[in-house]
Amino acid sequence: MTFGRTIKEKNGMSRQTFEFRPPSEEWYAAALEAEQNYTGEISAGIPITHPEEFVSGVPEFVRGSKGLSLFAIGFGIAALSGLILTKLIGTKDEEEEHSPARAYRLGRQDATAAGYPACAPVREKSSSNVVRGQE
Amino acid sequence: MRPVPIRIFDARKAISVPAVLRTMTIDDIAQWETRWKPLLDHSGEEDSHWDWGEKYVFGSSRNFERFAIEQNGRTEGLMICETVVHLSRKRKLPIVYVDYLAIAPWNRPSRPKPEFRMIGSQMILCATQLSHDLGYKWRVGLHSLPNAETFYLGIGMSDFGKDRGYRSLRYFEFDETTGRRFARE
Image (cartoon, rainbow over all chains, first blue to last red; front, side):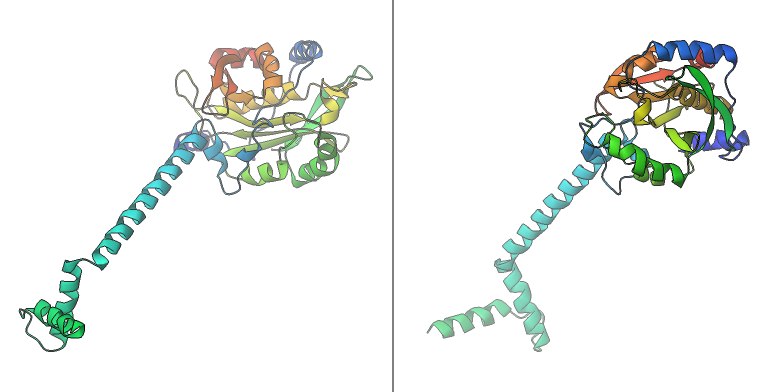
């Protein structure tokens, strides 16, 4: 990114200092002959078959050469990774929601908050409540 | 860049007429909107979907140079060059990359009676001179629209074939030798 700019600054070039030098008679005559023999178009850029190229928000330099492909692939990988991670974390939470370990932890916290010693067998309290309720 | 007097060829009268090559301005975009676009819309031409207004804004970054050719107050050609990011295919050296180049619809050889010629050629000459002044030794690259490929071959650019990384457009390049030869320097 900086290489060209460095050269530009080293040469004292800027948008203001570049000046087109009109071609010589010889050049003009040769180019005119070539153009008069030519019957096609004179365009460079992106063809009409790909109007989706013009996505707002994509920097111009990203479009150049392989930039767009790399940008799209990078973006795709990042999005996919995010999706997979979200799914994994979500699944884990869901599994944990009903796991004995989670119930134990919650019970232990509740018990601690209620003044029970941290090492108290809180599952017994929980299970005994369930048993009583069922009865 | 200050406006530089040039000549373009009036194909109907078969004479050279004065014109100006200068930096693109918002007036050129207005002319594209009012004069070019109605002729290009639904024309089926390969560049008919190009939005020069958008390109003008994108091209305001430091690494772009924007040019226009004007004749008698009318915009006849537009070009945007990128000067920092792109590298030559052979030796990975910096080049001037012609991002977009188009001539006015009424000048196109595909039209029944094109008005002016020598617009595209002088735009490419401008790109090679810019390359030289930047220290890039006349190196210029571009991706050609399919219908323009023979033009770039005709002026001596090397054909690097279809670029799968760029919509499968053919990539053309002037190296130090061919660019200099084209510019006749």
